[in-house]
Length: 330
Ligand code: AMP
Ligand code: MG
Image (cartoon, rainbow, N blue to C red; front, side, top):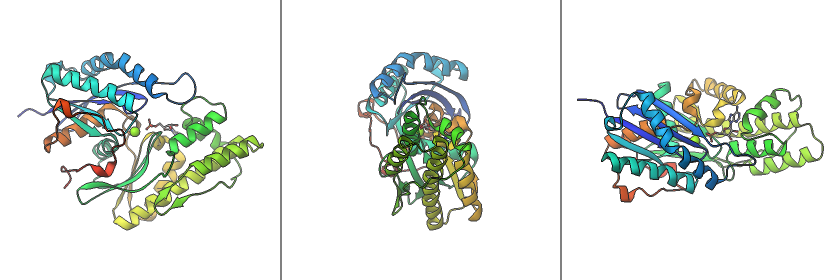
């Protein structure tokens, strides 16, 4: 029997990604085109127009990289949510067109779960507590009783968005996270900022407002970048630690765009070490939004009975991680 081959499309936000994965866990292609706003943050409709304009070309590039022709594909998957409505619909439209043209099954997958699955596949982590931190999400997730449960999450803005907005205040271009990390390295003094953990959830908007206020009153921007990172990351590590203690799992995984941050990695690894838990970070290509994670999760889901009629592939903008059954792990 030949392996299933799936082409997956990611389009929840700024990235239009096309990946090709096999049933055996080989990634044959992972091509992306990222929308960079000319100024300010991401405008959903402009991002969607970008995605529409690169969709055909990105699919062709992925097939070329995988050395496949369209007829070699067995399955089409796409990120059905959560994400921005216009960009999600653009990716879904491309996926439907391919599925109809090739007469192949189509399956919509959850973007957050795809981050975890590509992370498990590429690191060898089996059952981690996952901290998923990006421009659009901040969640602490662990598998329990058939689903990925959200143990803690942001009550307001995602941590990546918080860093991006503060960077904009400093006049730095999008995305701000990497620039904040550089400036933080030159910071010397910790300036107290509101630290908010409520129950198992984090909140970053009060901290952001206060950092902006202090900047406008003349505080050193490098010190503020350091303080923003220390405060935000400490709350993420606290919630991850409590989830780890509660679940008694033995692995911690960090993923999402903010996983690139070396200070966050260091803090989380220190915590994992103290609990004798192994610490994993997927290769950066797979921490970021990408088509490969959608293709791989599409295979997992399809092999366990998932798959939609094309007319049932409407996107779900606010699709929660814990609303999805995970039969491949039950
Ligand atoms: P994603 O939404 O997963 O594509 O991730 C993008 C987010 O990751 C943006 O908010 C970036 O600012 C953030 N990011 C990328 N690199 C870093 C870094 N080195 N430190 C902090 N945040 C980062
Ligand atoms: Mg993401």
